[in-house]
Length: 161
Image (cartoon, rainbow, N blue to C red; front, side, top):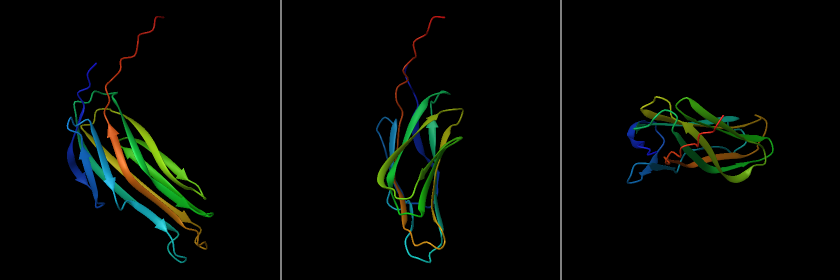
């Protein structure tokens, strides 16, 4: 079965700078960020820091139930007593990832978005870094890219009952 779903242009985006590349067939895009992050470094800084990014991208030809995988990639570093949190949302579907103390790694987290009746993708990233207000523990959480790719629908074989 052919999948006629394609990504269109942006109709809204928040104040975070990003570059977006869309494939020639409009079935994939990558949004790259250079400043989508939160960090707590110096002692005496606020114990909680947040950052939000949002964009609305047009979606056409999508039948309800079509699945579009979104991959969110970045890096995290946190010391004992500090945490990082990522909330990623596409329309009415979300994932939350908690990065505990002593994290130090690159990550790729995937949300398999199932299309409903929307004609656009309302994509949001919410980043949170926190620590005890008496601590000087360091935490840094950065999102570097969001990738999405529409794949061909593979029909499921019918089962005999």
